[in-house]
Each structure stands twice: as structure tokens, then as C-alpha cells.
Image 1 (cartoon, rainbow, N blue to C red):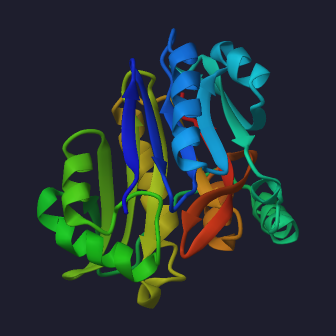
Image 2: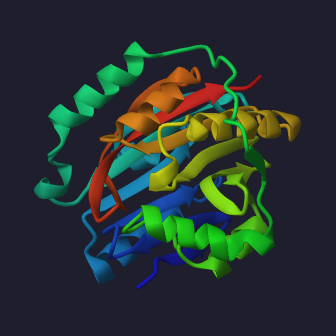
Amino acid sequence: MGDTITQVGRSTLQHGPENDRIYVMKLAEGDAAPVLSAIRDILDAHHYSKVFMKVRASLADAFLRDGFEQEAEIPRFFGGEETCLFLSKFLTDDRRLNKDRWETAQVLSAAQAKKGVGEPVSLPDGYVCREAGTQDSEEMAALYREVFASYPFPIHDPGYIVETMETHVAYWGVWQGDVLAALASSEIDREDAYAEMTDFATHPEYRGQGLALYLLQEMERAMADRGIRTVFTIARAVSYGMNITFSKQGYTYGGTLVQNTHISGSIENMNVWYKHLT
């Protein structure tokens, strides 16, 4: 069963049983009271164990008073000016429990030890990188099915990929001949000039060649050309590869989201990383 997307005023909420949470994806100014009311109604109906949101620091007080707590933050996020807070409300003690605390700390330590300044990397001979088009959607969905047993958004569905591609997501791939070896996307908010670097997947036969780092560098260049000022990611906290990739590329750690996202078969901790392009 897929997640439900709900509009409350000019704000957007997502909720569903797999992630067992409500995600306030976008909170518009003036919508705090109706969004809080909608959250209570959804919780009454579905009894989720977590509510998670991105919110302007100037709009956070109503949620902090309601029992939300800060898990991460990104300065100069909205329009390159206002801080973004990642707030969560835990509805059960079990959901609040950081079950992977030790492994999360080990991965973060390893990633921060490799922090770099984004030295350019090259593709191996015979590989090409380009922005994906709708004609690639079947191949893209197949790669996501190969890599992820579960995912918080329906990227296993070619129709979903096409829909997002036509609205607000730019996908980039690396091909060796006719084979899609690696894939990632930039989920773009043009109004507030930020983009989430996400959906990274490398086919198991093509790992260890730096393809994710190459994709990240290409996407950064494309986002800068499109006027994006801040890029960020929410990465699996137990993934050495992805956390090291972002740290190597000069991203800053912004915090850990405890038991936040159902990915690769279970609900996992996620790390926030960010970088300012201007």
C-alpha cells in the first residue's frame, strides 16, 4: 500500500504504514495551526509512531510547544537565507529508541575522517553520464528494484519516475554501453532554491568505481546552473559508502534522524548532510 499525499492549505503531508509516520514535506507560512490539526486527525485514524517535518526556524515554535524536538538543522536553507529545522515527534518509546546508535556513530566517524573539498573524479573508460529521460524509466525502475528491497517513495514504478521527472525531479545516470550502471536524482524546490540529492543506486556489478561520487558532482554542477543555492541529502546512517561519498564531496553533517525511514527492508536511522553552492 502506497503512502497518501495530503494538501493542507499550501502545505504538503505524506503518510503511510510502511514508514509508520507522517512526513510534513513542506510547511507554508500561516499553515501551522491547520497542519497541527491535520496531524492529530491522521494520528487518531492511523496511530503512527512518528511525525517528521522540515520547517523554517521562524515557524517552528508552534510545533516545539506541541512536543516536537529537533533532530537536525541546515543553515541558510530556504532561499539561501533561512535555517531549516528537522523536527520529530515520537509517539512510542520504541520508535524513539536509537537501536543502531553504535553503528551509526562508527559510520559517521569514518565519513568525517574522509571529509574533502570535492576534488573532481572521472568516469572509467567506456562509461557515459547524462540526464535521464522518460524513455529510460523502465530501466531506471528495474535498477531501483535490484538495489532496494523497499523505499520510502515508489521509485520501483516507472510511472512514478515519469511523473516526478515531468514536475520537479532531475534524474542522472551512468551507462556502460546499453547498461544502466548507476543512478541518482535531484529533487528540486525552485521557489526556495534547494535540492535534495537522493535515490542513489549502483548496480552490484558496478560498485567500487566511484560512480556515485561522479553522479553527485555532475548533479551539483547542474543544480548550480539552475540557480539552486543549497543541496542536501538524507542518507542511510549505516551506509559507509553514501556517508563517505557526501563527506568527501565537502558536505557538512547536520544531524541524525532516529528510526526515520523504511528502506531496504526495515526502518532505519538517517543522516542529514548539506552543502551550500553559493
